[in-house]
Structure formats: C-alpha cells, structure tokens
Image (cartoon, rainbow, N blue to C red; front, side, top):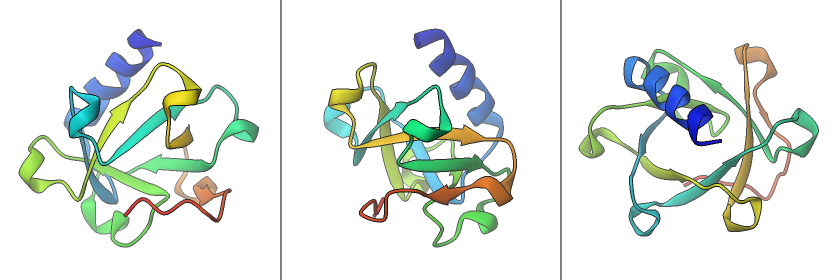
Length: 108
C-alpha cells in the first residue's frame, strides 16, 4: 500500500487536481483522510486526477494535486486502514467515470 501511495504521489507531483489537493505528511495536518480501495464497488468516491486545475473547480470527483500547501484547497492524508478514513476512493482513468457514489460525501 505504501508503494502504491508513493507511486501515486510521484505522479501527482507532475499533475494537479480539480480540487487543488496537497498531500500532507501528518494526519493531524489533514482536512480529510483518504483510503484507496482496490475495487470501484467499495468506493464512496470515484476520482479522476486532472492535469489542469480548471477541470476541478467545484467538482469533488476531480482532483488536481499541487506542490505547495499554500496553493491547496484541501489537505489530504492517505491512511493505511479503511477504519481510519473519512472517505474511500478509487482512482479512475477517464473523467467521464468520476462520480460521487455516496451522496453524503462533501470534501469541503
């Protein structure tokens, strides 16, 4: 799981989310804790990672990762256990697949 998170973070350094997202190192600094699930059916949120921040405006299902904490709208921490998470996400390959499956989820 940590390897997956490391690969994911490396990809995110080069890209940005729809909501401008920054990954923090400490759980206490996060606005929201995220757990990455292995299957779409387990997710509360199907997330597409965008290279452009304009795609992510006011869309919880599209993320744009930023390199600086000051540029972020939301600070996230990726947890190792599902029970520690506020939201379970599955990353999709296409923007058209991104959606909120649990209507009670609101990132900000």
